[in-house]
Length: 226
Image 1 (cartoon, rainbow, N blue to C red):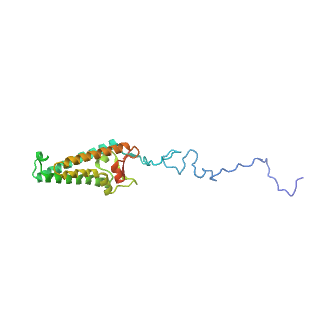
Image 2 (cartoon, helix red, strand yellow):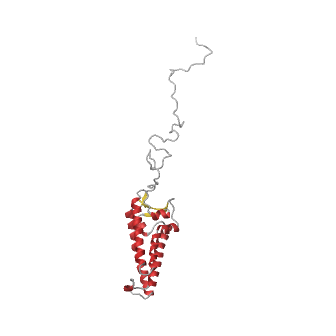
């Protein structure tokens, strides 16, 4: 006879195995805190970054957005395009100045007018620095850089200021030495050549950022869009 004090037992067979304990973490069956679901990356992981990847210390986070530091060849070709365009403009201006000073094309050498040489040196420097300073500070690109998909930015990723754009191209001001009679033009040309060589060496030797002394002086960098 059954005990009247015990509650009635349900009909059917009883499973003596206790139910399994719920998994730790999300009570709704998701991943635990800090981890992704099966086959998916952690949400705290940067997009496009492989699991387990760690940025090397001191290495800038280039490559985000498909950008890499501009190499020597691309920057040389961009400067060559800009140089050709500026040479055409300079030739037109020099012809106008020669007409103003009453000089023939054959008389523009050492024996030409000193006043003409001084004015031409100042005007040429202003045009060069104005071209690079304005375009790099207003849109980060000259025409040559547009053609090679290069652009200048600060280390924080913003457009450089006019001062920064002029500072990174300050070596173009060596042409002002042309105001010195007789040897000024030669000294200025040699100084620009030395500056260009130092820039090329700086780009080649710095494989991580490709920043020569001009970019370090201006606190800028040149990136290439892939």
